[in-house]
Image (cartoon, rainbow over all chains, first blue to last red; front, side, top):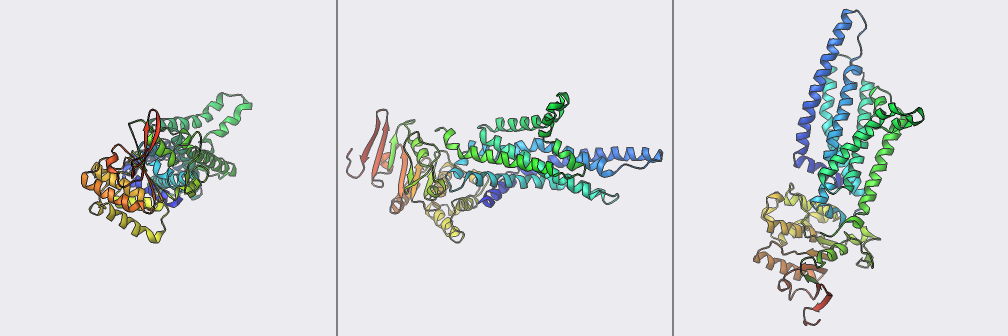
Length: 254
Length: 190
């Protein structure tokens, strides 16, 4: 049943044309960033060549920041996609279809999560073409590339699970989108606020979403980071399922 | 059974309670003897529901929508095709099966909504103002459908027009400010 719901979510994304618009936007913005990063890299390399110093790695100089930008870009995309999961369905009354069918709330949440997650992966795929273009003329650190990609995928899963949870709470799509976006920003800002906190409160930075992605982008796969993202995803998916299970307590007659 | 009453008298709330979309403060809802809140999955297998706001995906075609509903309602794979074909036939939706739902008229959308409720042949059918937006011909088709369906299932529907279901349903509950009055529609007794 999870497969049916996931497939439906994915079909819905393509049918409404939303995914194609987001794909165009994603390619345009990240394409520009890639171009800018490449130009910066070439400029830096030429200077280093003149100084007769060893050149810096293209993966570290271009791919690492490109993936970091992609992560930030998905902070804008995820709220839009997550909102349509529950809030939009509640608004259009199609959520009643799921709630009157013989399904558990976990199946509904998991199906929607997997469907939208695959949609996000689809958006990410063309971004991967950019780094692969580098391999035509230069050496790409495949290890760092795969590690960064893995981190990005884990981050997408975590942000989407938070989005689905917020979406299960909100009644208005606009409010849901806004709250998801603000929540993601706050969870990112935790890392920066830690600079102003006492050493005893430095652990707050560990809760920041992007903080755990840094290691992956640098080519380090740390189990602590994996556990953080997996725990974060499972926690918010469970909370989303719990909220949906209690829908009949909160729903009011129309 | 028909639920009748003025707007805001509680017909939709009652149907939402029976469908498990609302939780009763007291008492319990049993579908085929199964409590819908303690054993929702088992109870909902027997339930078909047409809400007052149609739960339709406007970007899907009628066929795509019904195929998805057939899977949601857990109709066995081998029976799915026949169940969809039969429902489409019953509700005269054959010419529109490849139409996008968003492009259908209000009456046709109502018929697609009705199709999703009866697709899995539930033994308890809840319909909230099912004739809303239907023309005279399709009200007659709907009445015929109810007559046939009644033989194997319990039907509870809300309506403003009792004459549309008279001679088809056995009982009526009238909701008013003083409470609920029950009528036997065959013998016209209170």
